[in-house]
Length: 351
Image: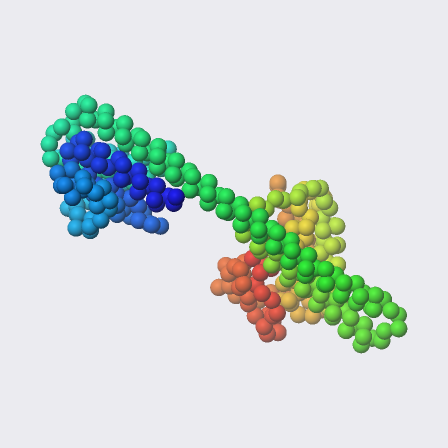
């Protein structure tokens, strides 16, 4: 049974009971779907046979039931403040309508309204009855709400598990052939009989394969970061090792740049090696993309009070001020110095 059906059942049972006991016209308001606005959900008139003969009628033909401007204002006040208002209360007590919010653990599920035609609603017995029924309705609504939340959480958990399985499968299916191709190309490159042109060609193939690996890593990381289940695998690492692993990804193309590594302080600290290396790989790749040949690229590390600062700088960056706030948006790209740059705008997204 859905939450909407269960809510309807609670109102269908409780509303006639309240209205017949109080001898007052009763209304129930509930939130519109995905909004903070209230809408009339049910109306019951104990003086009309049409409602007593068939309780489902309380949910039908309710569009003709309207509140005046003052009543609407008090209804909204009751909704915003989560307090009883209207007839006989300290808030807008002159009105002939009483608004009672259905609340449990500070969650507002709806508001009952009673059009007061006689003063019996003020009797002690009536107040005790109304309070008891409203409490039972609040508890029922809370149970429906908690059940729905548990169902949503279970669905989300199943989605996360399925996503992890798919990511692992995609990662394995793509990495395996890439690793095989890379291994064969490395064997070919280590052949001393290759001429200069073939050496350059194999270097370009190796760089392209590693670029595909980086793209795969970025896509997988982007998917993982959309999840709330990221767990950092922190351990003690030396910044020198991180810099070495990062620059080794680009050892061929970095021959066209003047790379300088500057470690100003002792660089041993706790971090997730794989993730910090991915960040630096993307930064260094962008520094290479957006710089001229023979220009300087600086990778550095320093401490500032309790912070470890890692930075990558190039000499030719020409990012316009208007793009500075956009460069970390997913899929956003800017043109390189020599025209457009191959890329997908994912690498900087998770920095």
